[in-house]
Length: 554
Image (cartoon, rainbow, N blue to C red):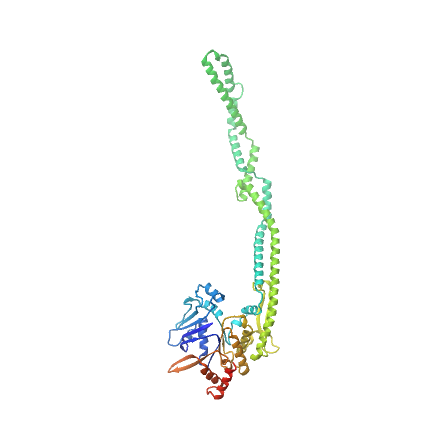
């Protein structure tokens, strides 16, 4: 709720401090006294465009400070302040200050902390609703109509929100799995080919190392064949060294007992025979191992080269080929398993979508029902406001799934028809200034219990009407202010009489200086002002008596 407004050097206002309270506050004064300046000043504090024309002539800057009584804790205001690191103690007022320099530029502050004009505008929507004849926000803006209808109808949004979140989660899981499956399945045929290729080749553990070693050995055998052949010529036959040693050993054995040295010679010769025999065995084994077979070497090399080419093809080493086969077989199995799982995820996503549609359809029906109740509630307010030829309609249009969201799949808009037989259209496109203000008032009364900004301001909502219509406007403004704060700039004595606080705006001139002042009226002054509004420049006894009747009838 707006507690006070301090204005310094705004157009005709040099210095003005106003205190406000709960209920209906009315601002009156003669035409041209400067009532609009107050709204311009408050609008500046609420983030409207900083116009240097607002700076009082001869001064360097204009400053407006608005003080609000905000909820102690919780709510959208507290959340917005917290999100922007603005501290406020429970029970402390919220101070909004804006200054505009005469040479251009402006600054904004919330509780003395610098903020952007954008944040100020966002905050202002929670603090104050200003409804003028050219207002294009608030109730006029279709973006807020659905929330208003939901609040009016007590619609069940939570189940739709939960269903939406479940649907989106299921859709996301399905899309992620589908993308992964499609990416993997894109190369499935190649994967199958590679698996079959490795299976046919059948690489063995450690095969490359074994083949390479055997190939190297055979290549050495090719080089040593001639040498081994020459050695075999020397070693083989009856004249070989081993044969000669054996002959000598047999002969020496017959005479070895004749002398000790001969025995020792025989022992040495026996050892030589043994060593020579071992050499013969080694030579035979080496000849066998180093045996060169061109056909076998050719086959061995083909196997080795094919194995290495296959490893290069699949970007691995020959040692890794057996593991690569196992890896691909597991990948193929996972693709096949994922395909089966994908079907289950799709069914879950479709089921979640159907659950959302069911919840959204239920919400749609609630909105249609609430719209009809709102239409009737607004219609009941139109005739007393001299809008009996007009009709109000809440349009609830179901949208396709791609337009759906956590708040359902409906587009809600308030429409009017001002003349019998005329088509329904948005408020702004049809209603004139006075009609628009009264339509807004009718809507606000119908939606009064659904909340909104605690402070509402109406600028000359009674323009062009009087008598019973003005009384009806005053009655509805008073009802709106019962649980909050409503301020109205008015020319109607019937409206002014309903106010719980009355502010009188005057303009005076001293030489070349013109200034606007605002005075809070007591009961006597208030009676005099309402009488002036009834009779004009000269206040007559009849006007005072009529003013008394208006005040007594409240």
